[in-house]
Image (tube, rainbow, N blue to C red):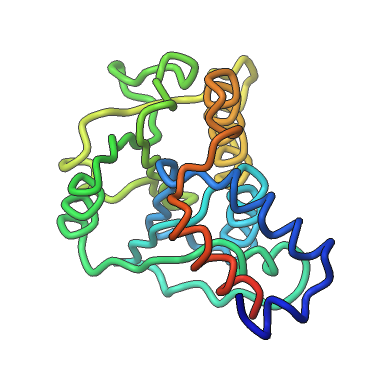
Length: 199
């Protein structure tokens, strides 16, 4: 396979293969102007935990977050981050790959996350901690989802919201056996194994 791969222990090789077989090619998140690097790091950790291979970053108003090398930031090694130039380019790119887009929010037309079909290719958009999702992106994405809440405070921390949404996506996909069969081809898996062996 490769010298780098052969240098790994059998246990490490098995772990990489096992994790890659559970990666969900058709599930992703979009981070739109999320300000706090700790929130971004925590979201990446949840993505890794639930098998999300990549996240998409659209930063038009906030400074791009600088992630540290400790704790949850280590998840950035295992989750690819793709930056986009504009809202239109982001939406066009994801739709061309067959993704259904949904933004988080609380409008009268928003759907409860349990009613969203996460077994379809889905990209969920999460917005800034204070301002939410930018207007241009909202105008391009009609579907909206929300997490039901029963307290006095009507919002979750954005990293907590990401974890809850990904859990619901995992629940639906697990029930359909989507974590039991690889979403990547054998050729793609072999390529990713070599990439991960060098990390």
